[in-house]
Amino acid sequence: MSMIRPDEVLETIEMIDRENLDIRTITMGISLRDCASESAEKSCTKIYDKITKLAGSLVDTATDIQTEFGIPIINKRISVTPVAMIAESSDAENYTMFAEALDRAAAETGVDFIGGFSALVHKGYTTGDHKLINSIPEALSSTKKVCSSVNIATTRAGLNMDAVAEMGRIIKDTAQRTADSGGLGCAKLVVFSNVPEDNPFMAGAFHGVGEPESVINVGISGPGVVQSAVKKVPGDDFGAVAENIKKAAFKITRIGELVAREASRRLDTRFGIVDLSLAPTPAMGDSVAHILEEMGLEKCGAPGTTAALALLNDAVKKGGAMASSYVGGLSGSFIPVSEDAGMIDAVRCGSLTIEKLEAMTCVCSVGLDMIVVPGDTSAETISGIIADEAAIGMVNNKTTAVRVIPAPGMKLGDTVEFGGLLGSGPVMKVNSFSNADFIARGGRIPAPVNGMKN
Image (cartoon, rainbow, N blue to C red; front, side, top):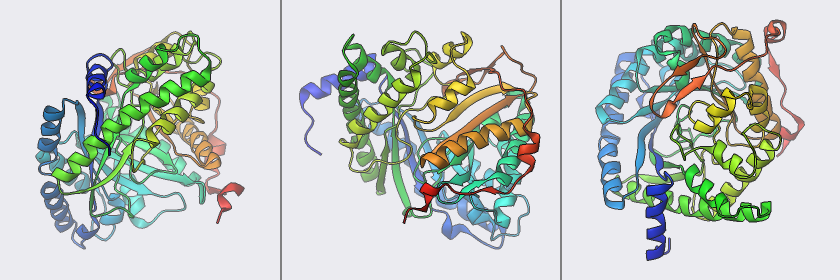
C-alpha cells in the first residue's frame, strides 16, 4: 500500500472523532479439522487448547493497535470450522458440550464472540448436522459468547425446505429458553442462503473448509462517514452522490486494510479479507437508515428506499474494492433493525415494515436482520419468512439471511431491550394468514436455471 499523507491522517482523525468511524471487528478464523476424535471429551479438549493457543494474544494485539493507531476496534472475535463437521466423528449425541468448550475458550481469550456452532445443510443433512441443529436451543441458552448459523440454500443446490421447517421450530425453542432476556438466544442464530465462508460478522461467522489453518479477517464500519459524504452534495444528482460515497468507502476500507495487515503481521497469521459492510449501531450518527434519508427520503421505508439502498450498496463496494487487495465476507450495507437508530424510528412511525425490508434485502448486503416479532408468532410463519428470504438469495445468486426473534410474551408495539451493539427491537407486525400446509410439504425447492452455470 502507498504511504498515507498527513492530510489523510487528519481526515481520518476527523472521521473517528465526529463521524463514528471504527473497525467493527478483528476476527481470527481457526481450523478445527484436526480436533475431531471418537471421544467427544477429547475433541472438546483439543478444541479448547487450539483456540486458546492461537488466539491467546488476539485481544491484546487489537488493543495495542487501537492505542498506537488511534482507531477504535469495537469487537474481537473468533470463528471456527463448522462444529457439525468436527463433532460428528465423536460419540456425542448432543453437541452442547462442544458449544460449552467454545464458550470457555472465548472467555479465556477475552474475545466478545465466537462463531461456528454451525451446519451446512443446503442439499441435505448428515447425522452430525441433525445433532448440531437439535442442540442449538440448549447450546445458545447455556453459553454467553457462542454464535450459531445454518445454511439452508444455495443457488447451485436449491432450497432445503425440510431444514427451513426445522429452523422455525429451533428458533421458537431458542426464544423460549432465553425468555428472561427477550429471546436473546435468537440474536446469536442466523439462517443463511449462499453463506460466505470468510465472514467476520456475527452471528454468521465461521471458518470455511477452504480457508487456511488460521487467518485474520477484518470487518469495517462507517455509516457516519458515508452520511457525511452525502451531506456534502446537497441537491446534486445521484451520479455525484455515488461518487462521494465511493470516495468515502475507499478511505474507510483503506484503514481496515491497514489494521488487518498489521494485526496479521503481529499475530504471525495470514491476512484473509476485509469485509466492506457498513455495520450500524444504535448510536446517533451511525445509521444506514439516516444515509438513505440524507438522499431525500422523509423516512426510511418511503417510496424510493430500495433504489437508494441499491445505490449505496453498489457505491460502497466499488469504492472499497479499490482500497483492499482482498475483499470478502458479506460486503455491502447491513440493515439490522434493532442495531440502527434510524431503522428503529422508521418502524415505530409505521414507515418501515417487514415486507418493505424484504424488498430492500434484494439489493443490500444480507437480509432480514435483528427483526423482533410477537412471541406468539408460529414456527411455520417464521419458517415462511426464512423461505422467502432464502429464495431471494437463491434466485439472485447473493447472500441472504434471517435473524428473527419471536420475543416471548411480547406483542405488537412493545420494545425489547437487548443492550450494547444489539440495541433495542420494536416488535414488528407479521402476516397472520396461515402457511402451515405450505411448510408441511417439505422436500427441496430445485435450484433455479441460473444455477446451472459451469
